[in-house]
Length: 102
Image 1 (cartoon, rainbow, N blue to C red):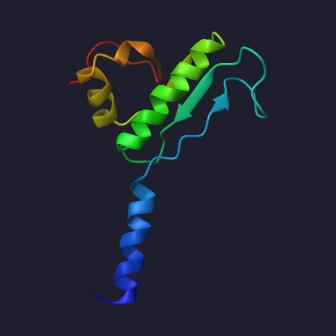
Image 2 (cartoon, rainbow, N blue to C red; image 1 turned 90 degrees about the vertical axis):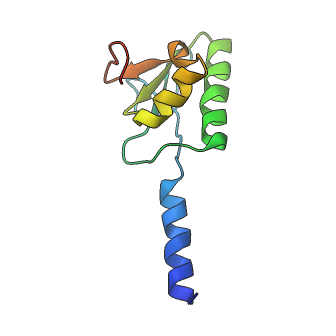
C-alpha cells in the first residue's frame, strides 16, 4: 500500500468519527447556568461505541445540572442503536422525531 492510499484511508476514518461539541441552546458563547446541551450530528456519520459513550456521558452530566440534551440531525443508525438499548426516550430531538423512524 502506498503512502497516498494510507493517508486517504486515515482521512476517511477521521471524517467518519463523530465530533460531539456541546452548544448551549440559544447561545453563541459558552453555556450559561441551566442551558441545554445540543449535540449536532450534521455532516457526521454514525458514532462508534466511544461516540455513544460520549452521548450518554453528556446526558448524565447535563441531568446533574437539570439540563436537557438535544440530538440534532441524528443519523438513523444512531437512533436505532439508542432505541435498541431502550435509551431513545432520554433525549430531545431536533428536528422533532415523531414516533418510530423505521
